[in-house]
Picture 1 (cartoon, rainbow, N blue to C red):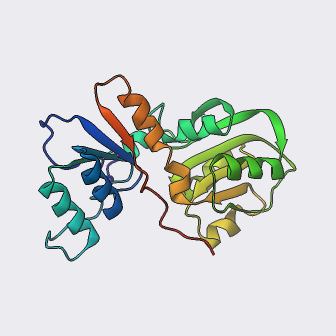
Picture 2: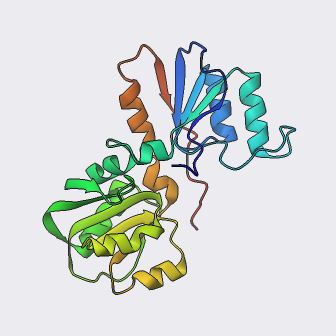
Length: 233
């Protein structure tokens, strides 16, 4: 997407690599993990450099991570919206996890997915399926419009802007993340809006990266330090 900063974030694209660390987010803990494991490349879903980096002087965690990566010859590549819109990307994998069939993009630009459950499911059972399948720390939702769910729309990450598109295409529920109070209000009575943690909706990016890299002669690690920054009391 034109507003995004997918691709190489730090490092030399011509350098040979032997070991890769896969993660959703690049955090100081993940960079330290890459150093410990001897990785030459971190592949993340979310970009390390999304907003402008004005200085690399150690004042911010972002600047410190860039400096540390360069010091240890670690390159960083971030997929983000290129993985969001890919036919076998974030949203397709999320749809597969929720057992959807007959899937196609929710939006013309490839963002989101809409599909169907093989058999209708009670609304409360579908909510439990979301919670258990994604190991979600929370599931927020509006009152179901119907007791039965069959057509499901979803968009990993921040996808509240597509609520009306999900309604227009006849979805019974719409699953996404980062929904605000008034977006819940707007959805009430139109569609069952389901909101989960942003990281939870996209952390399967590492699974996709791992599948892509499997044929290559690389040592591939999945980060054990990658986790949501949101804690629930």
